Amino acid sequence: MNHYKYILRLADNGLINSQRLTEWTGHGPFLEEDLALTNIALDILGRSKLLLEYAAKIDNTGKTEDTLAYHRGERDFFNTKLVEQPNGDYAQTIIKQVMVDYFDLLHYTELQKSKDETLAGIAAKSVKEITYHYRHTSNWVLRFGLGTEESNQRAQTALDELWRFSGELFYTDETEQWAIEQGIAVNVNLFKDKWTKTITSLFAEANLKLPENTFMQSGGKNGLHTEHLGYILAEMQSLARAFPMQKW
Image 1: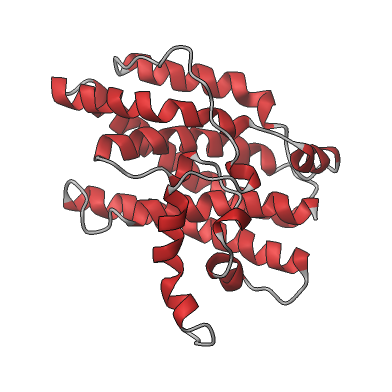
Image 2: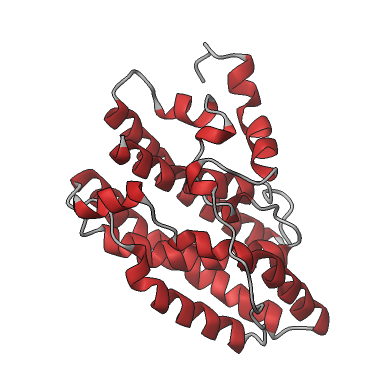
């Protein structure tokens, strides 16, 4: 059960993140960026699909990646609260995504060493893609922060709003501790200092200030979400739930 839940946490974080990013398709600030963000979303969705397939195999009760994606309620999703936050303006999307991208880059780089060969293989496939994702979003942070007074303020407003959700990226409990002990997972707190130093340095270079005395939000990894996830699932799952026996 711990193995299954751990893989679902990885899968759900990607699934909800990609669903949020695809909301920008056709609405990006200009054509090339619209296509770039859509491709990033597809990369993340592809990784999530592989993880959901693997979770279904571990569960071994007849589930598929589709039933896991489209027929679970919000309390059965284990993504962090950060990825379910609304897109807001483009600065808010970028501030959110750069934090996720750098965490994923460090995380999946280490997961290549997992004793779980399937997970290690998915990680190895993903690292090259995530490297590009982080390069892209970090460049946008600098464009916003060092651009106009308005672009800087929009980025600062986004950071003020979203920083409180970043701490959950490093939340660990008995599920992850079990996976660490089995050599399946990696202890994400071993690279927390590196993540914090790099992200803090990036924001400082962009003339953005981290909020002080922030109370970090958590609960998403155990199915306790903000009100936003329910709306995401209502849209994402509506067709599959309306026609549950259909093949697409």
